Amino acid sequence: MTPQEQIAIHNMRLEGHSPSSIAAALGLSAGTVRSYIHRHPMGPVVRACKQCGRTILPDPRRREKLFCCDACRMAWWNSHPEAVHRRAYYTLTCQHCGKEFQSYGNKDRKYCCRACYVASRQPG
Image (cartoon, rainbow, N blue to C red; front, top):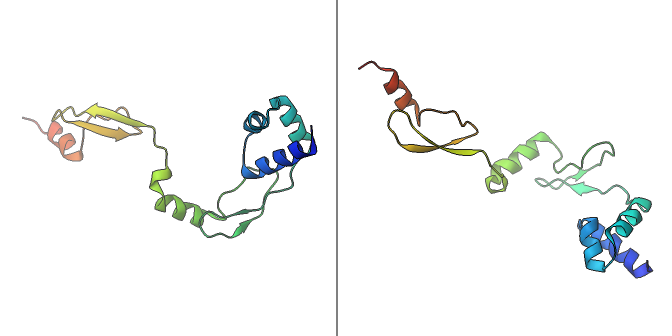
């Protein structure tokens, strides 16, 4: 491996590329890149909070943090609802009115709203 390839691997790692994408870009085998990365670990990466920009000190025993505190985490997710990947939507049919409705996270719902639930419980 040439010194230029080593510098390229280091720079691509800083940009966040995976070993397999680095190998494909440089024309090296993935095993060669992985072994180089294993033998030359990077120091701790200091990150900034996504919400307020404060520096986050890394803990080597934990995953990298994106936010400095719970308040910043909740504020960021509340202001970026498009970033939430919701996958548990179910299309169901109301047992009372027959209207189709969407339920998030509960595939066993029977009624589209509380009014239909109450009306179905009324005798007559």
